[in-house]
Amino acid sequence: MIIVPIKEGENIERALKKFKRKFEKTGTMRELRARQAFTKPSIVNREQKKKAIYIAQLQREEE
Image 1 (tube, helix red, strand yellow):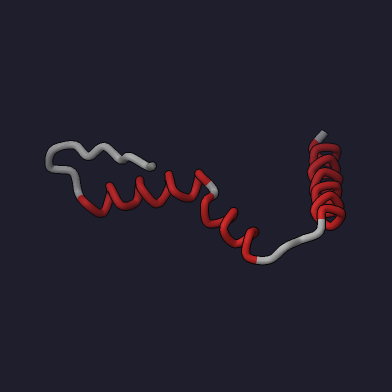
Image 2 (cartoon, helix red, strand yellow):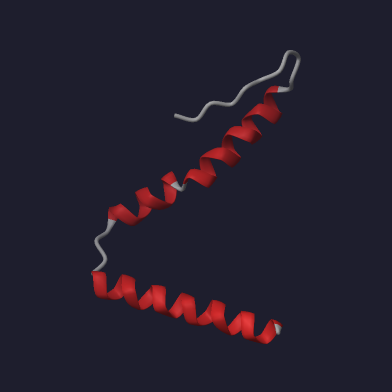
């Protein structure tokens, strides 16, 4: 459960913004969308490898 402490006199818009940020960080919506359709483990592994290669390539270019 996400708890957003609100100080006395704090704007409700700011509290909503904090809530949305915390909610996004938990990854709940991302997980929900991923669970809507089944993806084979081989495809998941392939995508993870592609992402790792891409990140490694970016790091090599930085150096």
